[in-house]
Length: 279
Ligand SMILES: NC(=O)c1ccc[n+]([C@@H]2O[C@H](COP(=O)([O-])OP(=O)(O)OC[C@H]3O[C@@H](n4cnc5c(N)ncnc54)[C@H](OP(=O)(O)O)[C@@H]3O)[C@@H](O)[C@H]2O)c1
Image 1 (cartoon, rainbow, N blue to C red):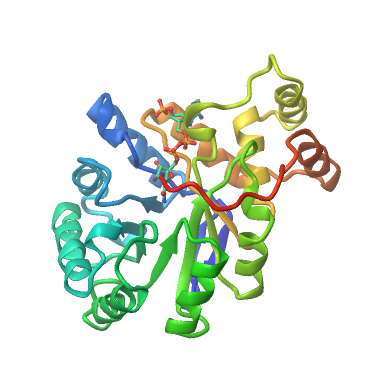
Image 2 (image 1 turned 90 degrees about the vertical axis):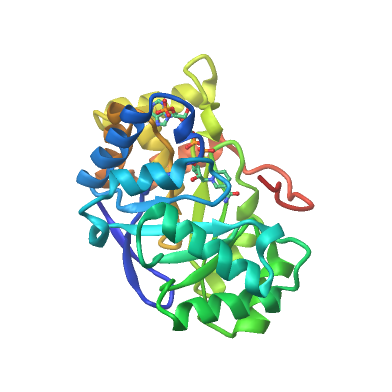
């Protein structure tokens, strides 16, 4: 699994991690087994949120006895992101996750509370040793610039945003801004939240052809495309051990420039959006 430097702490984080939204909506044991298989195969970046139902409790079970292997990320909901609310939300997440610290804590999306308040709480949590870094999610350029103005250069550990083959809007402005300011970009919903392009489409067939050349799968090719730049990370969610294993193996796949160009052409990045969707 390829590792990259992440945030001001320069933590070494795998390019492919594990999402956990909806892992509590099916076979609980299989989902916990999938997280463990993912960890075994190097997908040690585990992404969760206070919003994700029982996911934090399930992660606690999956990582029991192996906390030090994990780069654990959770998120505060915007409606909780006041100065005191952020601290209380973090403490609830720590309790559910049965850990003393988060490797990174994110504001899930921009809400009504002034960013100064949330950032002040993040700093307090950091100085208390409850979080090692903090970042944001679903931030567009004006919000990113505001966060940087408040917190200073190098403070933001990442921006976690929607990014998959059929949704490349971040490439217009968010990704360039993050690259210019050294902020890692964690792409979420890399499989389109379950709507992955199939072989009945010409673009899906391009993925298949490239995959066949590498003895890989179209999903592995997609994941690799989504981390083709040094600033990019991705966090597919899987509740099945065999899916987790397939996803992790993309961490060792290398695509040629010509193959990347052909995927780029098959899945055009589309028009510049007004703003990112908030999920
Ligand atoms: N910050 C935010 O606002 C935000 C928003 C959305 C998501 N996220 C994060 O990003 C993570 C990933 O996004 P997502 O959950 O929306 O969707 P996703 O990862 O794009 O897709 C998940 C779907 O793909 C399936 N899948 C995964 N690996 C597969 C494989 N190898 N073969 C076939 N199917 C496979 C899963 O099925 P199985 O479960 O059956 O394996 C599930 O149905 C989330 O879990 C969450 O942690 C963050």
